[in-house]
Length: 386
Image (cartoon, rainbow, N blue to C red):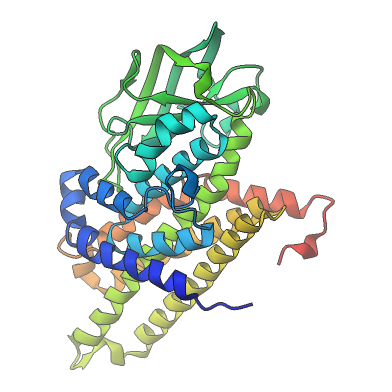
């Protein structure tokens, strides 16, 4: 086992950090305050390959491993959590098309998506189907060479500003086996978007409800076979959970860097805050937890890359642990800053707002515990989870 980054990984990290420092960090506060979706900057990220991180090179992607992709996303998140989170979701949706689409679908959609010229949203959640995704009700009826889609999707990241919707739609029986994955151009007749939903954080990306009113979708836009949708969605979420966990780690690292600088410069009671043992111990605990979370995420990414039979369990454990740690580290960094941390002049309150949702999306942390506990209480060998 070698926990050091190799030469290529160091180069990926440094390139992402340079882009993040120059293109994300200086603008993140303004994007947050103005609810600005920085599409032009995301396209610049696409020019570097960051919009097709683990898509195959054959379709224009970088063809990186999930581990390498995580290293890049962590650096981007240090500059802007919300924008990086959208890029991570775009990567997941684009990969689904590249991996499960037919030749015509791949040729039509992937070149623009991997370059960042076009952007994708992932559409699973509905107003009545959140954690119980298998109960979704948006339906597609086959009519000749088209499906006709009716229903709605809720809390969709990027909706109203993206070009392609990768949607999980019911085409058959109730339950998970009746769900298929369809690629729907966002400008299709009958597709509608609500006003941007007002959120606690993630202000640099819109979130909307999507409605489908007799939307015609060619059969060739289906990913995989009919009934494969839920399996494709869950496969995508294994990587998506690693991605969002990584966003938490990157933000927490940025918060720790801020907290350390504040401890060294702020004086109270005639001494810098760094001289107080209680704060020294707090910083030590924050870094220890963060390092543990980062290693768990990288282990999960490795398991996904290796096709491990328990990859979904590792992804769930990493997502649960890293998003909890990430939020708590950001919260403690805010506390270290005292009243200044609560001010929008400083990024700490934004870190807290942006990381809170990571404990909810891509499967709530309660669902992550359910995934892990089901595996542990099954007949399979419990000692293989280590």
